[in-house]
Image (cartoon, rainbow, N blue to C red; front, side, top):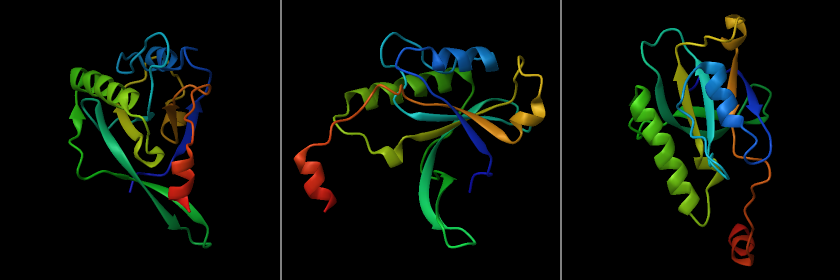
Length: 156
């Protein structure tokens, strides 16, 4: 299970500069920035001082019951995904995932969660905040998928 923290999504329309802003805040260049739709998956950025190099991995989402019986989504590190370590492998993987999802006619919204752990945050003075809050790069809010009649039939 991934350590529970608050997630702060960076939300805006397509091409508003969400990924670029996060690259600047963390002084990184991991997140793909391009005109049009660039980010096709949810990338949770976690500050982690215990690592020597940044790392990137897939998250599996499972619905579970909390202590009060409420259904909650719990993130687990995907044991079948080969973790990427270091700047260049992370940059390449971000591009590969975005390209793959851009070419996919349908996207499984339960399978688009990834985490990038970062060991520095030069421009953020309040490091304590980063130990309890993860910033999150998400696809642009004006991007959508259409639902076909076949999709509706399959859900019944």
